[in-house]
Image 1 (cartoon, rainbow, N blue to C red):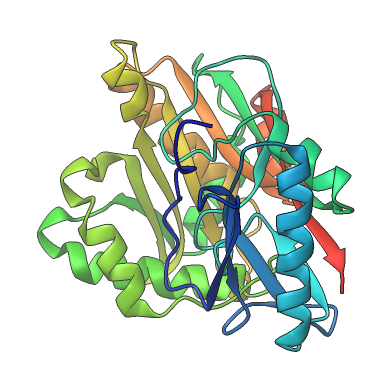
Image 2 (cartoon, helix red, strand yellow):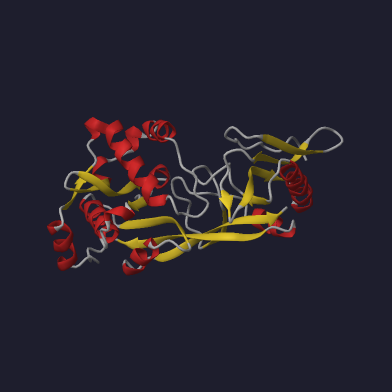
Length: 307
C-alpha cells in the first residue's frame, strides 16, 4: 500500500479504532458511538460508522475490535454503518441498477457489505429508493381531497421570508410523525435549524409543501432538486426527501395529497422524474410510491451483531 487509508469524517464520536501495519500505516478504521444512541428492543445499541478498510481481512479484524470496545462500554448490540444515529450518515448500498448517485444518498465500495457479513454481521433493516415519471396522473381522488378540505386542511408553500419559523414548524411535525420510527432518536431543534440553515440557498420554497388544519401544521413534504445530477450536466430529478403527517391530526390520505401536490408543482417547473428516497421497508409511504408506479433502483441495509 502506498500510504495511509483515507479516514472518513465522524461527527463527535465516542471513540475511534484503527488497524495499523507494523510500519504505521492505517489499513482499517471506524468510529464508535455509545452515548445518545437508540435502543433496539430494550438492548443498548453501540454504533459503528465512518468505516473504511483496505481488504476483507482487515475489515474483519477491525470490526472484531470495534465490537469488543462497544461491549466494554456496556452495549448489547453493534449496529452499522451508522454515525451515532439515523439522523446522520448510515446504511450501505447493497443493490443497484447502476444509476448515478443522487444528492444526500449513501455510497460505499461494493465490497463493504460483503466484508461486514464475513465478519459476522447480519442485516437488521432494509431501505429502497424508487424512480418514477412525473406523468401528470394524480393518485388522490377528488372525493378525498374534498373531504380533507372540508375538515379544514389546506396546503401551502414554504414562506422563505420566515424560513427559521417554517423550519420550527417542520421540526415539530417531524418529531410527532417519526416518534415510532425504526431506531428513532429525537433531534434537538437547534441541530435541525443549524443543518437546514446551511442549505437555505438550495431550498426551493415551491418544493416544500406544508399542510395546515385551521392554521395549525399537521404535515409536510420536503422536496429538493438532485444537484449532483445538475453538476454532472444532467437534467435533475425531484428528490422527495421527507414526508411526514402528524398522527394526532387523523388526516387519512394527507400524505398522498402532499406527494401529489409536490409532484404537480415539480412537473410545472420542468421536472420529468421523481425519486422517492431512502424508504424503510416497513414505511407506509411505500404504498404511495407504488401508486405512482415507482421502480426500485437502489437498496440499502443496516447491519447488526449481538455482543
